[in-house]
Image (cartoon, rainbow, N blue to C red):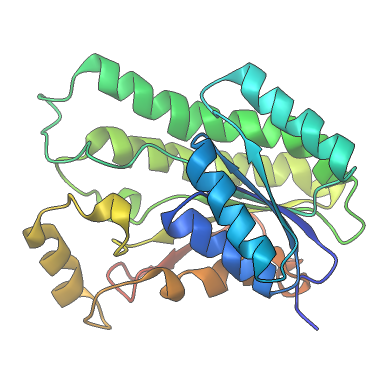
Amino acid sequence: MGVLDGRIVVVTGAGRGLGLAFATACCEAGAAVVLADVDAEAGGAAAAALARAGHHASFAPVDIASPASVTALSDRIAGDFGRVDGLVNNAAVATGIGGKTFEEIDVATWDRVMTVNVRGTWLVVRALAGLLRRSEAGGRIVNLASDTALWGAPRLLHYVASKGAVIAMTRSLARELGTDGVTVNALAPGLVRVEATEYVPRERHELYETGRAIPRAQYPADVVGAVVFLLSDGAGFITGQVLPVNGGFVLT
């Protein structure tokens, strides 16, 4: 018996990296998982591989920067499942945007980061809220923040600001959805070794890996257990919280 047996879980940005790790962990915990991604090739291949392994996994295309696309995702899930028990808001712009000071960031990039990371997170929650309210187990939302917003990482202001906004939205959403039995929490990973962070300079990786209480690199396997827990019955009375999962780089 898995802790997510019988649950319907949606993971955005699930085609690769942390999103795929979250989707895989949820499948292994017994959930039927909808892998939603803007990259149809990667998302479709990931869902197909999980299905071949015997899991209940399907792919749904979504561009969370597009309100119409998010609505189409909600309509599709409503037709296929009729409810959602868990939502992992993982999709974000993160790759290749760091290294510039706040004075060097261009307006177009700032707007793209905010459109996807902040507005997109809100759009997905808004679109799936009705389906989450139908969950007999109690709906669960996990928003992916970042510990960069907890320690104020330099040369990454747009991303840091967007993840700070995700943390603030998590707290407000927890109060708005709490009366419906839906929990909303945020996960704040450290710098995880995935494809999306390969561009990060060696010095930043070393800062994390020597500055953690557990002084080593962080991998997706270090993060997925916290997500599964927050989607489970065990976290039913936890809401509005930010959980740093970074090996003790940030101590709160």
